[in-house]
Length: 239
Image (tube, rainbow, N blue to C red; front, side, top):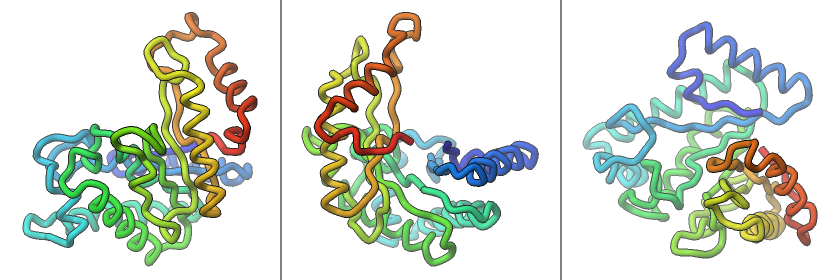
């Protein structure tokens, strides 16, 4: 089960307490609990990239605080740390996912590219680790993991900063998406990469956004079957 830090940051005390109760229940039942962080931009109430975000990641990564970018970013991270300390349970934190896509302010349209992204990720991990022991860290690019113009593997923050390696893969086998074979290729690449680097491999996000359940009622069964039939792509967790 997973939540997002924004569920706590942007909600009132009643909703915040409800989310905290759910998180603690999952931990009590021996479940793995995950946190995403769709951090809103400093310049607008969204995590979706806008032109005002062009230098935000770069400036944070380089420690440029002319417009209080670093100060703002530290405040966001401190909110997350405070939530972890409040919950007092171990969690997997998924930081700045799908960075090789162009839709988030930390994505490939931002100034600085993969170098700035890696510095941003490492800075974040160091900040959180210095203040709490409750977090493991997941890194999950969008597909493709090891091919194309923006392969996710090029954005790897390094072994010291990652515990879980994943890939986000939507719409495989759908009416408008990639094939199931492409999905198997990417999860196999994640599995191989994780084995080489002694990390836990996961299929971090997956879904079918194009087809109604009545149109493809066996879609999840097909996903599972293709993973099970693969050489070793099945050796991963699904968040």
